[in-house]
Image (tube, rainbow over the protein chains, first blue to last red):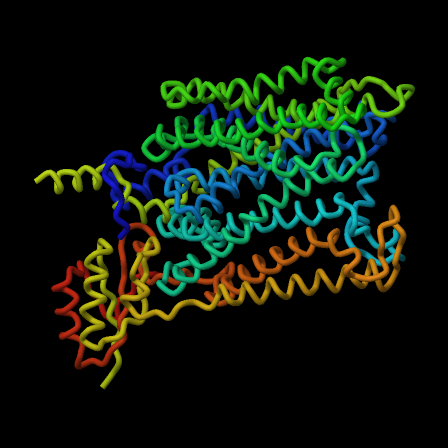
Length: 462
Length: 178
């Protein structure tokens, strides 16, 4: 048993026995779904279907149905791709990096954050698959011999590194998530009454029994997977940033991109985790597990990463001036004062100014305020990617190629569709999967549970 | 002289650990323990050797690194060297910096998946197998110790288990799962 300081706030509130934890986590799965759940699912599915329609239209007609044009050849597709991939960074960061740092507060949030990661990466993948223009030839991205149509893939290209990085990230996150779920599925299986759910959770729990040997391997696997995922998280968004940074486009060709993108990704990922958890803890009555302390910790990460992003923006501005390269200088002047100045202003306000209010303890422990802020941050991070891509491409070296970009109905439809898909999957996840890693929580209830902490305090007082 | 299996149920991890220590100090080996979560200090208490799975992961990682190196050397340098933006591709080491990201990704990919597959197969956790815990309560809030011993030791062990706080003791003819 790990000893923990009494002045550390408890992570599990109330008087929870092991059995009570099982009951609380299983309640949304065994109970009936609420009306709000059905309403949200319907709304999300409609958006998802709209997206599928627009996606089919794009494949059937060609990529000309998007607003992208000769100058602005990357637009909403890559903006949305980078936005989703960024959101997908919080899950593995929470479960891997916080595991290595032995942060116990991760245990209440890692499961849903990892689910969020997996769904977000799926959304991101849709844009990569589509933006090639002829998605039925996307297998050319794999290293296949020449007779399959193209030459060997080009291993010098960051676009190919991206294929490897994103697919590794997705599959490793999936395995990490599933392995963690197995003991929890076994718990649901062992108390299931209905034959169908008994069968379903038997299949999902792959025969887990919690034998000491299995637990010892399980813990080793979790630790090594965390150790492998930690550099993986940093590599994925660094490689995404190299898609831009290795080009010769002014405003993209900067060495600050990898750390700046990683910080931005963690920033937006935590914001999305907050958006989802603040609703989930209320709807599924998980207030005793996802406490104000958890929200405060996440808001602190929001200040740290938001400030890193802010410093990166200012550094970029300074270096573009200091470099003396007029193309660089113009690229940044154009972002801030050109035709898309409003996007730049939105980015600066949402990402740099607004997170600073979390220095006030009153605000970072306020649920309603945090919820609003989490959405503001994600809007800001979407605008950051938009600002990097569209205003830069709309005014490059030759003024005769300068033009504007306007999204079409299809662009909006596919983006809305991915949001619909994300929420459809997340709602199904909260209904059928254990949303909190209950086995892990049971292992800390004696060191971080409220009742046990109070007992320890009394013990010391006498 | 027949062998018997003793199943002892505990409702907390402290008596379980205490009991494991008593039994081991009396020279009785514990076959297995089923618990709802990983109990810290249990591996040492029941004398489990450290798992080798991390070393396997290291070997899988090296395999992934070698495969990626071989693949990129073959495709970019040996089979079809192409002049891409004037980047040198006459020898592997000249092009090496561009190959680092994929070498890394491939190392992680093979290490993670190789280790996961080893874990599932070594524990024989495959879809369709029967639950491995004899009592369904051990995934919720109970802890079960399994001891295999000779008939004549039974009463001695059972009294030790009771003394350390076992709440239920059943022998091998008891059926938990239908």
